[in-house]
Image 1 (tube, rainbow, N blue to C red):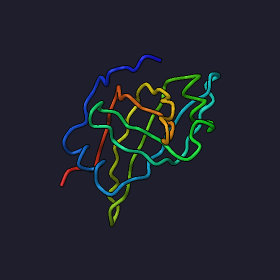
Image 2: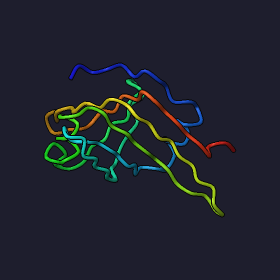
Image 3: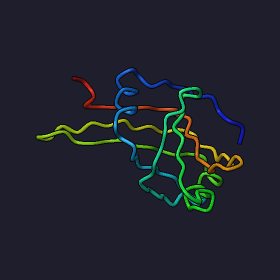
Image 4: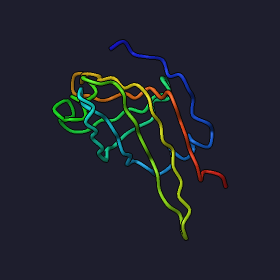
Length: 123
């Protein structure tokens, strides 16, 4: 897949939230037939590209990696809840690509956001 350019940008509030202590997100992919698959994943923000990069051990052998190769649509969520009940969330939908492992590194899924929605991030 040719790497798409991110069509939308995160707001300052969304970036502050994402770059805080939250390192676990949920990645939703679907196989070629449209069967959904949602899993918790480690991730990082790629400031140079404006993308979310998801990786892990033996990542290229995972179902999520194969799903993105077959169907590039993906969704990603990072959320938490502050007491007493104040949910916060950044969720995005976009196109994903698989990136092969560089020498000594790990393969990854790179998500190019097309839609970003957030709530609960204000003060």
